[in-house]
Length: 260
Image (cartoon, rainbow, N blue to C red; front, side, top):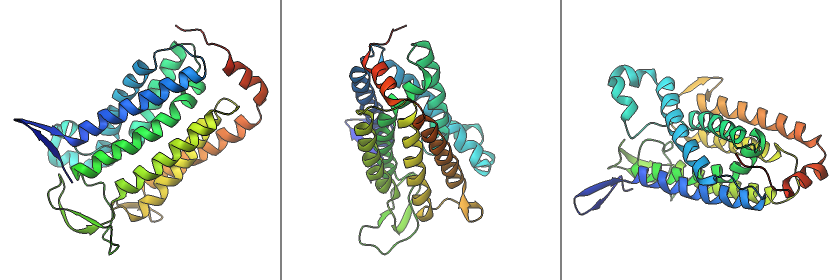
């Protein structure tokens, strides 16, 4: 656990540093995906806008999801370095990607397909930032040998708990790898996004059972309810995409796309 890196007289938050590394990793994967699909649009710029939108969305979702914290801290909660909700980031990030994909004449769904592997890997790297900063995103107490305590974290805890950000990091890398391999094969537009929503939805739904988030209905947390919604949308998108002729889509993806 290392909330800050101390270089000379400068304190660098590890969460911010890992967020930057996550954006770089995502930009590299999206750029490679664009090249593989013969698209000449600015992948780095597209990712940068999506990351900013995602950070804003993650913070707003967290504030709406924890009104008690807002009542206690007031407007300064918006500038707090802790407290980001993944589904808010996902929603705002998707909107930003859709808008940019339309503007660059790539297509909304195709842009999301191309961004999905980078989004998965970037999310995983960001979770390491949560782990290092000890921002409270860890799990319930455990006696497993890899349980960790966070006495010096932004939200201290002194007993061993599940290092759930580490679990999510490993799951995200696996999901990113699977999506990248699948995206390299002929597929209908929307298929990669569908798999992304299903896989990440399942991963988040499962990890929530050992996280400390409060339960709201049927013994499920808000994040689990959102996970179920994401997975359902993903399944519907996969079924819809499966009806499209793969040969035609593959031929379209082999041709260069016009740029804005």
